[in-house]
Image 1 (spheres, rainbow, N blue to C red):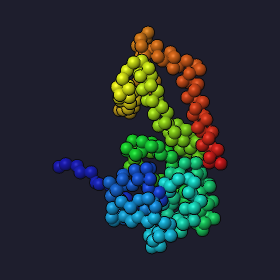
Image 2 (tube, rainbow, N blue to C red):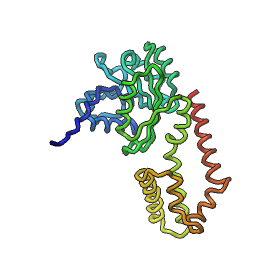
Image 3 (cartoon, rainbow, N blue to C red):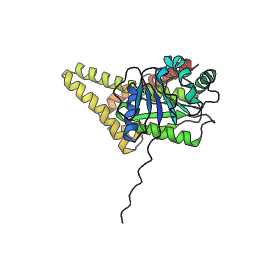
Image 4 (cartoon, one colour):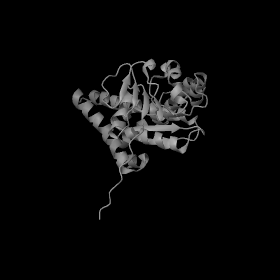
Length: 276
């Protein structure tokens, strides 16, 4: 007798506000997971297949639609314009915001002012590798959020990568600095390695190929091995060898250790400023 896994229940209907790069990546994952007929609000998308409905203006949102969750994936600067139009849905469904810099308190207050007092808002910070299903999303939920709310958000965000939760919203500034902004640091590393390879006489195309593949391959090795990053670094470093010589430069007190800490701190400070 063979054991057969029970397929997961279909995802409930959602209201997705914003279907750009991040919203589109999430929607693709949800569709593959059996998303119930949902409504997408986006003025630039018209290629969403049935049974889902796309509307270009908030005024066209159907009054009889009852989503299980509202996902805010629009640009943060559009929040003030969009929140009044979705307040009527937020009276009955929790809100998952993936808008950078918008706090739970700020969104809750804005929804209350728009006619949805007591709305439940959950905050999430995904990063751009979500576009290829390799994202990292960290979430914060206030006490008003139920376990069912958290479970649904975890399942939805798992469609584009790993999901974790923090206990305090102030930790989201550090999450933004490390994870949200982090892909840019990795891209910079690949960019600088490519430039250094060219400076050492490599053809430009080859320098780009080996720099990118080295970065992506090292990331895959770290992910699959499960070993600590420091241990992996030690394993590729022979005493007195070429890697050691390079690391002597990069790990000097005034080099990467200090600069990376300063960079993360600067990003976290800016995230706090934007959220204030």
